[in-house]
Amino acid sequence: MNFDAAMLIPLLPVLILAALLIGWSLIDIARKPVQHLPKWAWALIVLLAIPIGAVIYLIIGRTRVQKLRDEDLR
Image 1: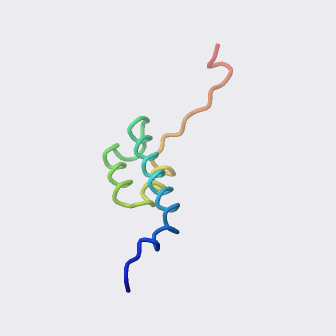
Image 2: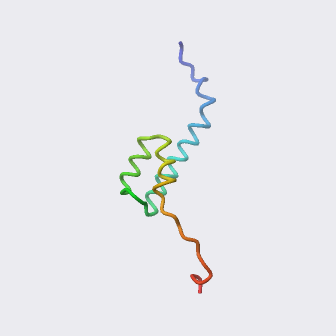
Image 3: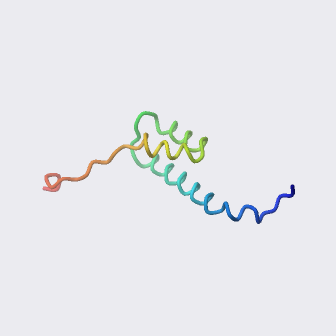
């Protein structure tokens, strides 16, 4: 079986989406507080368990932001 670069073209959108998801997760880890584990551990999980690590972080590790109420703005 010969390797042909043209075989990778159909996978290109999936690879781009996975890279975007990982990048978004790493930026989110760096900028916002996280839950359950230290930031370095979440970053390691995201980088080692591609792409499921990023999905797990976004579901479990992300801190929920509270919505502003009218009283908060006064």
